[in-house]
Image 1 (tube, rainbow, N blue to C red):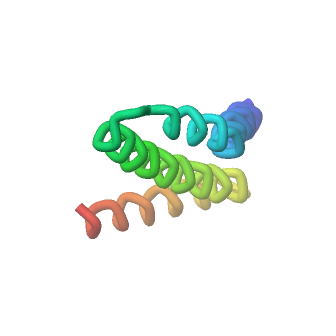
Image 2 (cartoon, rainbow, N blue to C red; image 1 turned 30 degrees about the horizontal axis):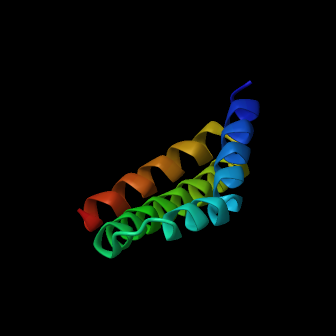
Image 3 (cartoon, rainbow, N blue to C red; image 1 turned 60 degrees about the vertical axis):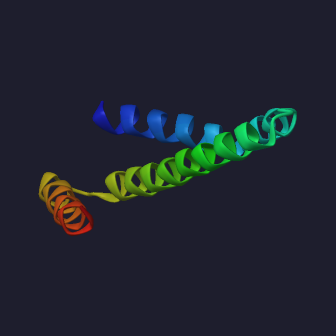
Length: 84
């Protein structure tokens, strides 16, 4: 059950990333250059976060046991603490 949910979530995230062209085209239509630049910056951050999320979901899907998952979560928490 959990594997199916994670896989579906991954596919949704992947689909969003694959459709970035549509968003980019809409951003280019914004006439105010400052607004267009700021929206582009924010969208690039969102893309980066989505890539991080999909990478993490792949790691979750590769876990073969609960102990693998616990180790992944601990490692991810340690990395986040170092970054923050």
